[in-house]
Length: 167
Image (tube, rainbow, N blue to C red; front, side, top):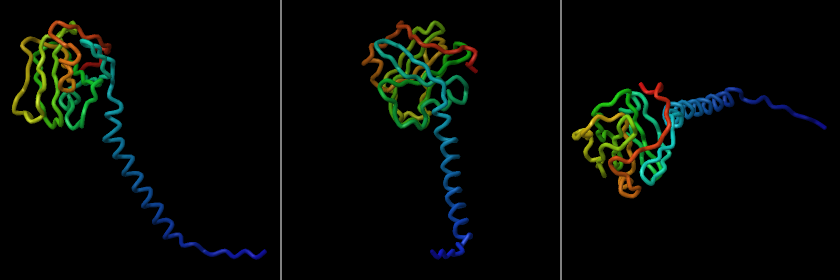
């Protein structure tokens, strides 16, 4: 048996390896910067009215300011809960929103104190919605949820979060 060995071009193989490595690096960095922060957002289960929602928590200024900006949609069982360090008349605007939402403000006891339904993304930052009394929490839900899940003023929300995590 005769075996013939050919010298392979190492520069071509090396170039291919470098290109593939570069592409994988770009994909990995993109994943870490775009998707990982969304995956790692703290979550909780929120019960409000007749609904049970898988809820992302926004516990610091950066996450509260970002809110749902850039999110393509919320499913009917999803929500965003913004928690603040103290009660106040926390305003909500629709910066970079892509779909309409219902907004529900809760007091320190998690009782609904104010509701605005079907807020349009067309409002942008030109209109800021505020409650008529101090609130500690703001819940953003897909438009129509307040009516579909019998959410009304004085209903109490049920959810767990560590108050020490609120910045």
